[in-house]
Image (cartoon, rainbow, N blue to C red):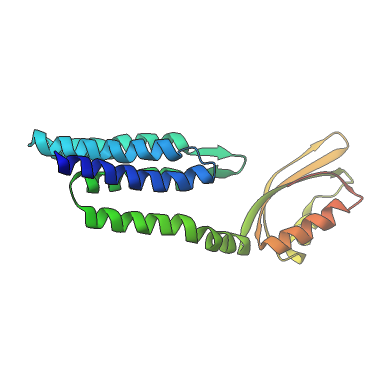
Length: 206
């Protein structure tokens, strides 16, 4: 019985530490959610030990249940998918809870250290990598003058960006172009500044 309380306490601690990090960054699954997931996974694992033969089935259902929770966190915002890191964290916290519930403190604590290290230390590296090749969606509206918008593709390239043409359409006296553009953050900033000061651009969304 004492061992069971120790397992629950460790699961509470691990879930709380990871959840505090997610709560600090205002993520969908925060402090209480991570605690519930870690403690719940530990409880299911402990129950499967007592039940016996159905332990493998219970463990598989834990994985399915955690996957369902994670899927609810992921959402699309404009042209980006958000919540993937938090969904993956939910999945890992469930695994940590199963390790602790099974009495495998060594791999459970080691895994928690790795997860916290990734969440605390890697965002800077991730932002640095992302700044080297950031994708933006550009929409340019200008007056139609019997010519295409090819000059803007040349303009993107001059700024050090790689444009991929999307849908273009003419509405009345205006022509509208859309591009998915990849390149360094500084090149995007240079491009945006020039387009904002272009007198021929009537509307610009980026």
